[in-house]
Image (tube, rainbow, N blue to C red; front, side):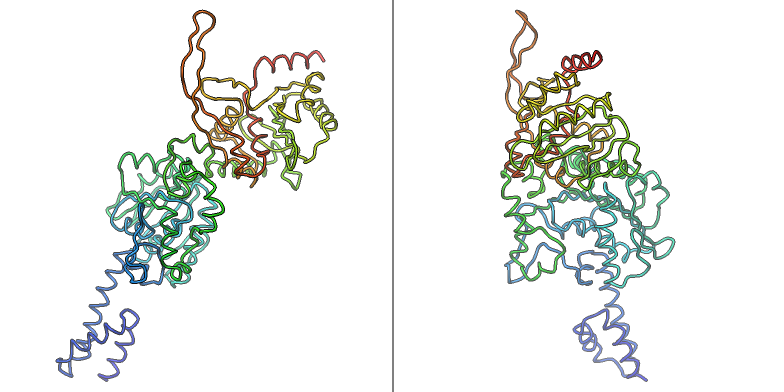
Length: 545
């Protein structure tokens, strides 16, 4: 019986302790009497197992190692001689920060495993605390469902953890669960109070996440509660940056260069890590950005740009705008998507139609219709343009829908067609990108003014067409401050003043994209301020015609 009991105890405890621990316990009990050997042996092993479990569950990094989850970061192996991040921190620092701090804010470059860390820490929290609640949200719900919760479901299955894990819900008991929310459901997030609540906000730089931070302040009132906010430092106008300035919570910055350096030092171990940034991306994409540019600071170093205006269209801002466009497209109130290329058939009358006219090469002629402050949609597009047919089409459309006016790209091939439409009495504004802006105190030219008008349109809730090309083109928009002398007043009382204005260089956009940003230009024209004299004169002729 004693031998059978010993075998059973060893079999039970071997899952919790390595062979070395078993041997150590046997050696320790060599002097035990035969009658008490089994009891003493089991008690010793159980004590060590409890101690090991306590260390494991208290430290998420030890827990990850125990569960076979690989993280990149500090290492003391002989292979690399003690690798450490050079300037920023590492993935391990995120896990340690949640262990040691009530609030953790992660400001990271792209592709460093930060979203996977959020999923892993959610899993650790659910496996460690009981009862426990984990709430996750993001500025984009697709990110919740397809990124973080994809990893949570995978870890739940691989580790064989308790409960049932579904698309965005993991339930163990009524008091022990995890739930993913969209930011549209934030107002419903109340009453979540338990022994330990973890609130994870992914894409925390999004404007939509401000309400999530307010909800976290209401919910996280217990002694064991914690907040994990994960963001890309795309813009300073966000809660993580504001709390960085306030010195609230613990802040972790992760650089893509450190992530790449770790992969170089540990090529075998790095092959098993989760979807990290690659040297291919670094060499083929990021290397084309100047090291001092806003993009390089954000995407590579994980640093904020010097000013928000350097990065005119943050990716999350554009994606949120396109999500709103998807919702409007389903409503079919303003327009119906009718073409395979995303063009629409209008159901409402547009207020302004921006027309970017094709030049040489692969340029396209694109019409972008603006419907008040709600949306922009592409109503027409073609490659090589027959300008005579194009003019006839514009005249015919305006006769059918006479409430809008054109903002026409007349800087190149479109100049002749503009003159013909103007003579025909069509309300039309001549737009040349290098011309004088309406607000000369802020912008260097009309192109810059138009793009910032487009940014304000998006910030105020306007929807942009769902288009991969448009998203890429808007990411290429960068503004710089340039010196300018402006004249204040008129006549003898006027005086000159040195100032700085914003300027967008379209040649830089073309170099980066290796093509013309036709879709972005058309959208900018759709919201560009129209010079009032031209607009009034156009409508007056039209009313007489």
